[in-house]
Length: 457
Image (cartoon, rainbow, N blue to C red; front, top):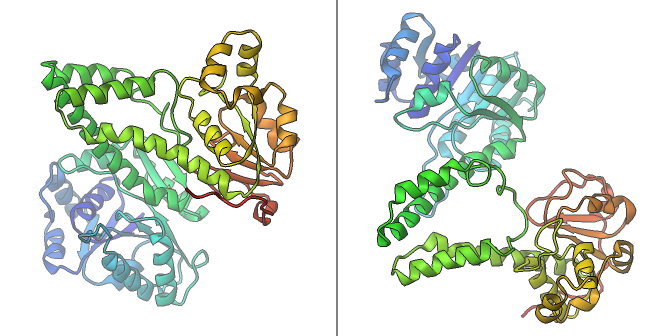
């Protein structure tokens, strides 16, 4: 396959060497004549482990060349990678000027190219950049996206010092595209690269690098804060974190990484509070650990805001316990939401068969009446009664019976706090607490007739 790479800095040089190693012909393009000359001499433009022999081998085999002529690079390739820098301003905004300049150059070169061309953004960019680049290329080329060219988002996940190994042995390859042609081309391009090939939405691919790196930063800071607490207690922090990482069912796993409602129950609130208190007593500053509870409280507020935004007085809460299949109400976050709505004058109906059962059998009756005096009398095990009496249905845990709610109760407003549905064709209005665009039914866009103004305090 013939590839052009615009930008011969760190990522571009590694990409050029590795693509050539995979057997593709690569044309590097850069405004720096020095970088172009280095590549054409079989030398890398960066200092990086394993890169020098790869560049020399690619040059000697005739698989790697470089030029300052962007027209030549585009016309002699099927895919053009944009791998220029996106430096941050002091406020944290990205400078996308280099990317836009390259997009204009590629567009100008496409004016007199007949073949379909694929442009891949490899640089780290925020969502929306792909769309903007497409508009720039259309304007510069006079051609149409989808018909004459397409734009793909193919973020890199390389670490300095191990970039070549990371490129050749990634955990996954991510391509954001809306083009079947591009999807097939990239599967062919990366066919000899191990790891799962994931083709996804363009915006998903654009944001992944930021999510990954922010989480990596969080892991480092969390580990350091745990270490500082352990040091104050004269505990071996590396042994603690070594054991922590051995749990791949919960600690290092996808189990908790699902956007949704606030956490609750008897363990997470109590134990995280205890660790914060311990740090405080030891005079150890732990800002990240201290921020966990405020963030959790914010998610409760987000739920209240969404419910209030619907402007309906009658609200049905489907599930009061903190987790499906239990009657445990200890620190259940939806309890705080229900009590807040009651205080603002909402008519609340609550369905929870497990909690209702524990009331009838006196298993949990004393706790419910003592801790939830405003709620215990309106909890029922009659789902139909709650749904029929409510305009807004709030799904708070993943009980299987709630999956039938859209079909059984059309034209209601559903607020989903747990991603009960992967996708939806529902005649009523649907909103997820931390996701959107899963209801494809046109009725989703019908205006809601409000009977209650949001209360501000």
